[in-house]
Image 1: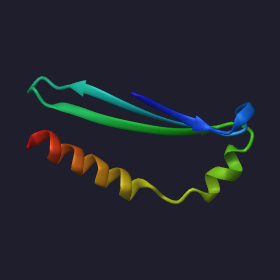
Image 2 (image 1 turned 30 degrees about the horizontal axis):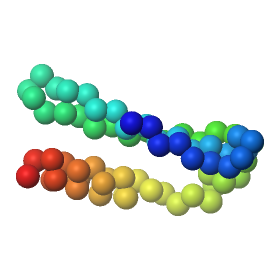
Image 3 (image 1 turned 90 degrees about the vertical axis):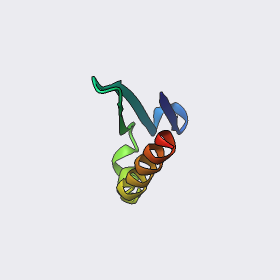
Length: 68
């Protein structure tokens, strides 16, 4: 799944890609990668807070919900 958003004319684009990979034991590995591109990406990227804690919460909650 890909989430894409940004500003007109490609000045800033944020892309978040979620990948699901089945494991041999029947479980699924979830990975997420976020990238920023465009002329304003260097400036805007500096203003974005560290979202890693929120991503970790999301992964933990997704795991909990999928296993319940």
